[in-house]
Image (cartoon, rainbow over all chains, first blue to last red; front, side, top):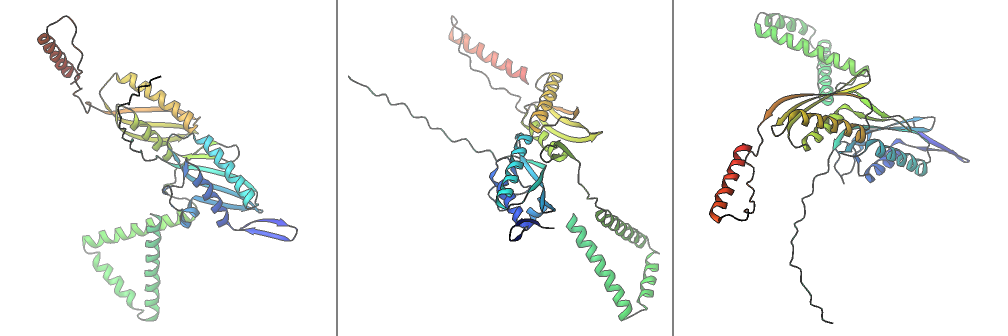
Amino acid sequence: MIGFFDTELGRVQISPAIVRRFIIREVAKTHNFRFPGVKPGEDVSRKTSEKFIRINFVEGNVEITLTLSVEFGARIIKEARELQGKIARSIQLGAGINVRHVAVNVESVFEHPKMEEPLLIEHESDEAVVVN
Amino acid sequence: MKTLVNILSSIAFFFLSAFCLFLVLWDSEFVIYIALLIERMLDFGWGIALMFTAGFGFLALAMYLLLYALGFEPRLRQHLILSKEDGPIGISLDAVEDFIKRKGRNEPGVRELQVHAEVIDGMLDIDLKMVLELHRNIPDFMREFQQKLNRELKETLGLSNLREVNILIHKILPKENANEPILLVPPPAGKDEDDETDHGMESGNRSTADSS
């Protein structure tokens, strides 16, 4: 199946790959979610995107099921709601397809590598003598 | 695993097709030689074992393919639905277990932690198997840990259907750094310097002995 919207001149069809691109962009923007096995800054391969983004077109509308990894400590429901909203909005605005629903399945938990604390070098404070 | 089974099944089917073609195109009596060979193999113990292994292997492969074709994916664990408004949000039991493991690892006093989450009648039961460091009152520590975990699961993950958190203390180990550092307390006023030093060392040694 394929997504579509109708204009006065005819039907415009949108392939699932385009919808996936929108989703990948929105997921990359968030700090709390990523695709399982994908490191930050790494490109999401076609195989990965097809595996973790299931797209189903129903009468031109799209139903999306995402499998994601969540950051340890993030409030899942709140963050997932925001992501659902962003994805739906970007697809509706960018591709013109109606989004029926975006289901989010959290499959695993990840943690950002801890940054080493910067070495603080304390200097003796220079005292300035002010003379009026 | 899925790839391995696909490769194995394709190899098995290639062999079958090659065998059929060989029988039809070259030597139709080949099947008799095969039957004789198998019969001779079955006289030996290793031959019986080999045939058993091959039989069960092919059976397992056939069952796997059948279940896969029927839509049962192996190792696909149950998901918990956290919320259904505006599209469902689910979390896998693996993610819940991983979350608890990470929480436990950050907890001072917990050396090792094994987690098993299970959904029974729509309610989540969590079983924890722990290795602790002996450093304080264990019942109090466990109570606090259970409460903290319960709160975290409800607030961070949004799990509302948590029924119980069962904990099994598997082992209690001595603290890793048993020798606590000696505190250099400023000497109390009104005593000789030598006495003070001796007293300080004694108290330091005592605290070390107590801690060990």
